[in-house]
Image (cartoon, rainbow, N blue to C red; front, side, top):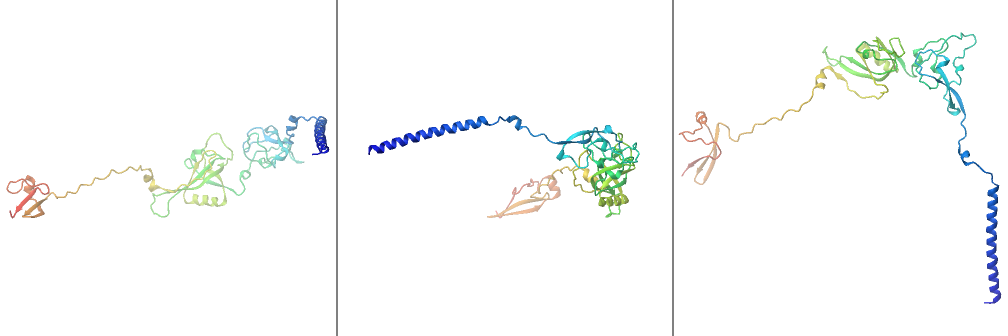
Length: 329
């Protein structure tokens, strides 16, 4: 290889290495300068969420019962997110008691349903100025109020109060039998809400006997209640708080009560008498005639059988093949 070529290769390698070193130094200094020139940002502060926009909503300051007169002390304000405010609420307490021009400012408003403490107040939960708590305001859309007659027994002893859930049972005489002492019970409706007891739509602290109970039913169930009351007796069954499950219960008849309450006990196995191969008044004997053997059954004599002797004073055979009559020998 010529010496000029070697010199050119060596010079190229030296210049290439020098270019890489210079470029690396320039890039490092440029990145460091840009980093120093960048503003300092507080990462913790940037991680905090932006404050949420809120607005005030009127809520109940305590539990408010149906029909209770309302006053400004019955309510207070609570902060709600602006995009989560329920429709029909109030922003200020003054909006609740706003009086139209010319109206009496002393007229009070009442609650049309039970309101829990700290629950938002809706415009359909309070009456107008001077109005009373109407039962119609508590009926849900699609339902009507129907009253049934009750007494001390059919009305659960007076423990049914407005707001409870009850099952409605119908007791009548079945049409498929003429017996006057036969009755049938059927569960007609389940988990029906009680709207009122007698003429009271509010919960009372002490139970009281009632003559009528008003139930919230649809129009078909209202017809069922009317027919059931005209054809038999209606009885109510009080459900536990929050128990809304519907169950399937068959009808019950009075002639099946004893059968339903009877405890089934297994009968003892019957002992079967073993069949005797030989009847008591008969005996089997074996007759031998030469090489021929024959077994026959003969009748016992009553007197001989009682004495246990065969004719002639011989012992009477009692088992098969015990008597052998040798004939032809």
